[in-house]
Image (tube, rainbow, N blue to C red):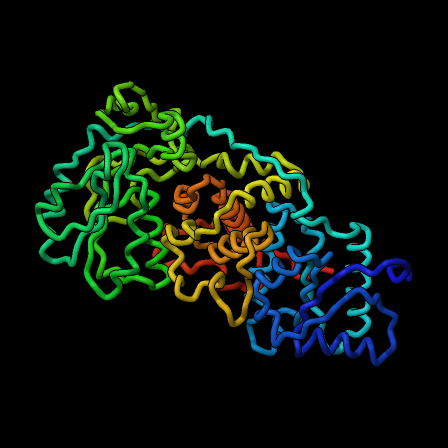
Length: 481
């Protein structure tokens, strides 16, 4: 066979124990001629195949990966392949964003009796991989750095919330405070252009509450720490989606959380603000003119316009008001139309696969591996059992190379597939400004396209797509190879 002539390639196969492994065995017993490139790993069920298995293989030198299981409606464990089908289809749509050709990965279904079909599947896939050639390595790509164009016209008018009814909000919090352990909000930080989380337990602490474009922290990140206690939380529109997602996954109880909200007019990109201000010693004053902040640092005045320096997520925001509230203060603005492609994702869309590999190599070389992105994520609640820290199994090394760093970011993005609300905390918390939000945005786009426009964080009663399945999927082909 042509694929058996010349150099073998490195192809990894994850085969279901009950069907596909039996199908491969049937083909072998029948002495059906097959390519010799495939290295088979036997798994109990295709539902056991975590996407990180495939990503780890592809990032560490595999030229192709094949997953094969029981036919849908014929799973030994009833529904394992239904769950696998959704996860693997999302992965297939995700791989190109990190510069991996999605043709190097495929999943299919082969029963134990289909020895001839197994021969066709493995031959077809191996020929495809040989046509692509040996897989390029991300560590061999030429690194380059490129910044997303953040000049996207906002969907709505952005402002500083200067006229927001903050005093009315404080009164509402004080009225509810005796019933609650605390209320989570924001307070002035170490200077006038930074804020920090505020945990209000008294009326005096409520008076410290601030509202405006500097309230960048997602307060929902602290909710899971208060599980079992009654707490209040002050949210922006994007923060409220994280609260809803936590409710969806039963990580918090609706009865235990009181949600306070005001319509958000946008938040500033702190990294770009610091870039504009340059090195400074002291902030002398900061005031708002409604369209931006007027800041004086070291005696020099600067104008920080919202239209210029707002976060990318604010430019694409379609829900400035909270999607779920107990106390809403202020008039909720009309929600804008459908959002355009976010700036970070649009940047990657404009590149080819080789450019993306170079882009991520350049970005990952800057990564400090500090895990600030994980710690700032409100949906990352398994920190004590994070795969990045696990030693049994030992999925990641402590080596500071681009493969290990990108592997972690890929795992993080895929674990958030169908769960990420786009709050942008991961990217905001990154001390070196890596646009990692784009990876989460790609998984969100794949989920939305595959599962009827599903967006996380809107319906507390909804089931995240990757935690469920349908026997007949509308946008996933049942027959693969």
